[in-house]
Length: 289
Image (tube, rainbow, N blue to C red; front, side, top):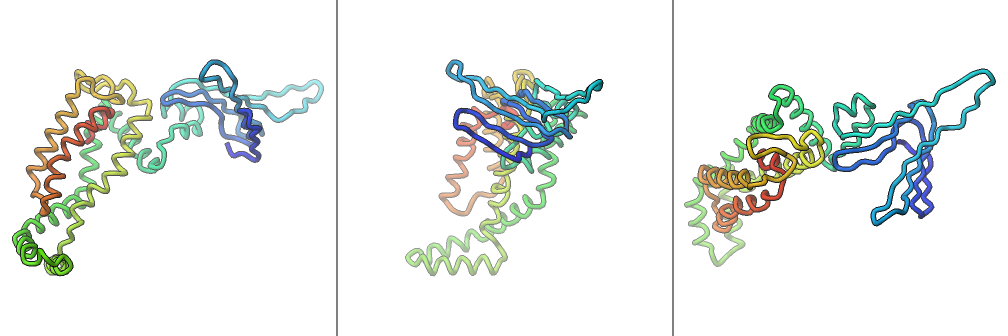
């Protein structure tokens, strides 16, 4: 609703006046909404009413006063929707209701992710397999960047003997060591930070994927295989996080080791840290990772 006036009397009352749009209340998976006629001016009033610990919230829509001539009739239509935040259903009821599914800051990434997986789901009929196919497709799209990162890491590995020699030679002169290392990188066309770019790129993608699984009604109670009967909840037996930790260890062994000893230790412990963190996250997110 595009408001023309907003009034808050500090007693739990919020008033909006405008035209078109909708008004309602939503939770994680469900909502109730009032959708007035688009051409009709109306007033929406939200009010918090006392009642128990949580209280109650009321939503009222008031239509603009209408003058009815003698012998005539008119109708004022307001549709009411009470049900799940299922995007196909919301689109059929009123297209503007789709905006009730809000993925937050990364909506511009999360919304295309959801629609891509919904399209895949239409083919395979299982959200778990849709996640797997979507992840494969995403990896293919990001492959050029991952390839550049792998090449950079391989070049760094080739330079490791020379880097160790410089570290030993200038161990008492950190400034000179830094200059020599930068010269070495420039000579061989290596960027030591390039190996980290894929990980930085994963952060917004990971968060967007998390929001999709957390908010989208379609993943609620969506089964995958055997013990996984709800991809929006954690793995009840923690099998998937353990498998994820194991595969992260295997992937690390396939990649060249980091040049810095401290970075090697961090990378060694990363699968364990991720495994513990993923124990309580939605199993669909663990499946993606």
